[in-house]
View 1 (cartoon, rainbow, N blue to C red):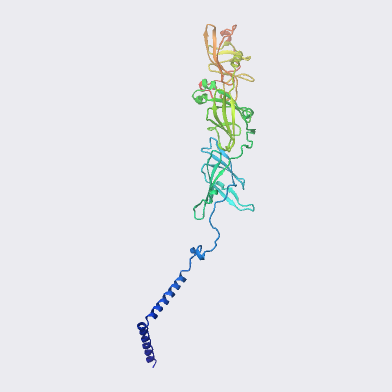
View 2: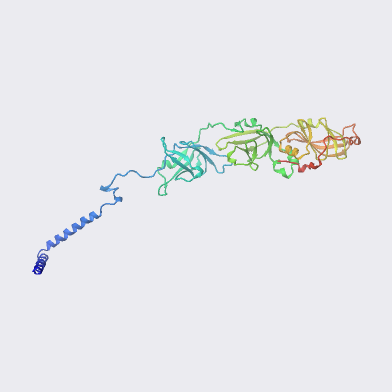
Length: 436
């Protein structure tokens, strides 16, 4: 029974569908249109705007500004001056941070990394210890004609790209410090135009002694200008300088670059700028290279009378042998041998026989007129002592020729004995005498 009803219902449905297709085509079109509208509406639901479309159109939302920006360091960075010392090699710049008051000497185009921390007063900047890299750094470039330093601020963003906005924060021009600078000292002495007087620095001139007796070991010094100094411990010493030469202060002495032990940038510096017949011009630099003092060293003018007066103190009174004269110098009787050096000191005349005596004289630690005995000769006057005499500064030399004093005979004089016997083990030729 149910099977017959099912077959009948299917037959009636088929007849109804056939009638609609054949006799009511508009109905089929309406059905198709309804289907399209439904599909379009379904598509609009599927095309609900994604997150990237929420910033525009009717769906736009008001998000906060998430753009990364450079920090404003215009009032944070201070330029203390450029380091123009000759050992700066390409220029260095003294910087200071306003928030932390830290200082740093930056080289040209060096990456100077910065740390930043929060405080109740705002951000506090500091220099990264030992140059440990951070996302924020600065680079120093050249100084312009007005003395302003160009500094570029660099910030590495979260996506590893460099941030360059705002442009006003990226490139800064820092003004130089005021011309009035703090006072500074070298060895406890205030540095100003009178510094050479206070530190007892004297320009002596060409050293005639080294020129004649220094040999190849001192050939370089013999061509330079001698400048005498006094150490912090009141010890005399000399340095030989030409234009461009540099001395470094070790706390007690001015040392040449080859003799200095330490880091040159951490001590004051002395640089010779110009030399003429009358004056030597030199620059003194502080440790940071931010302060310079120009000094003048006037060349002393020795008097030839100085040597002549000293020669009058020496008398040739006899001979111990045909090569060893006996002299009286300042009341002292001395027996000389060829190439002997006799120095007049504050306590009298002294023969320089030991190596330490010779070194002290050559280095300038001790000074005074020096008699160099060359040889004995015989001329129309009889026996003659020949040699030369240097003044105390060794800038003048005069040849001497002393005849045997009348009333003394060689045979008699040969019996004299000198209290200053020569040390044979330390006797050196003039060419081998010297020090540093």
